[in-house]
Length: 148
Image (cartoon, rainbow, N blue to C red; front, side, top):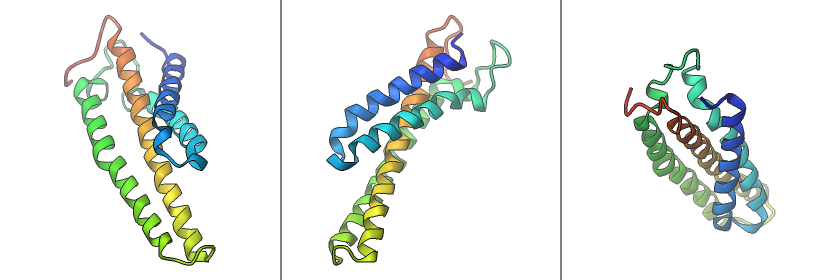
């Protein structure tokens, strides 16, 4: 059974990979921040299943460790929340484009767009970390339950 340190290490590697793979979709000036955000949030995501269902026994795998949870978390985070964060970033960009550059409101909109993009990167990292945890647990003799 994979332990906390292994889940964390593999989650961070997964987040780094996702961050590097998706960095080309981000403005050049924000790429390093995108990669770091994906990497760090993947460490959190890799721990989430065991936070929700502590490994008190080898039979601790329930809903949070199920294939259904992995698919559900993936679809919800990627399709719904990630897309919404990017939409909000674009709205901030549009408002900033209509304002005088270097005005206080322009700066606020530019910072808002960056924060929404960071939130999107954090969601990608969380998803990568969570998925890495499920893949590692799925490769053990006890595997993963389909639902519970």
